[in-house]
Amino acid sequence: MGFFSNLFHKKEEPAPAAAPTGDKIVCAPLEGEIRILSEIDDPVFSSEALGKGCAIEPSKGEVVAPFDGTIEQVAETSHAVGIMGNNGLEVLIHVGMDTVELKGKGYEPKVKVGDRVKKGQLLLKFDMAAISAAGYKLTTPVVVTNTDDFTSVEPIATGKVTQGQDVILVK
Image (cartoon, rainbow, N blue to C red; front, side, top):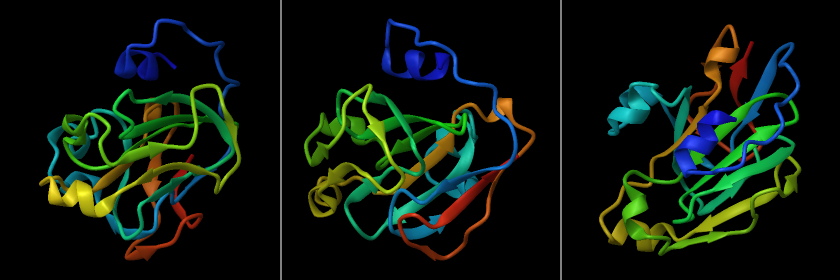
């Protein structure tokens, strides 16, 4: 949980989650085309400094919950959501590259910090045309920010994916 606190400048430290056990799945929070994280045009995400995972080139301006859990953070600029899964995974969904510069324009969060969510529940809407027209890429990293807590975090999908499809296997 320290990662979310540092990333979004959260001052309160929530209670620790249960120790992760067994295989876990992250489902696609967006419809679109899977991209290999190391090949996207952002050094922080492509270096896996924030965690391992994948990226998705969205074909629809909606982000849904990749599993059941609790919303830990919604960026002030609404371009990113952090979720702690009931499965012990911390996942960051960051819509677009450098989109923090939009200061929330084109984004409409549907959840707030502390909300309990179910897999497939709408978390965020975003205006793909407006974001693209402003000159920003829509590439959306989906990363397990507590990667170090697990043996492996591996993308398992390629090509086009739909919301809810298995995209990352965590062991």
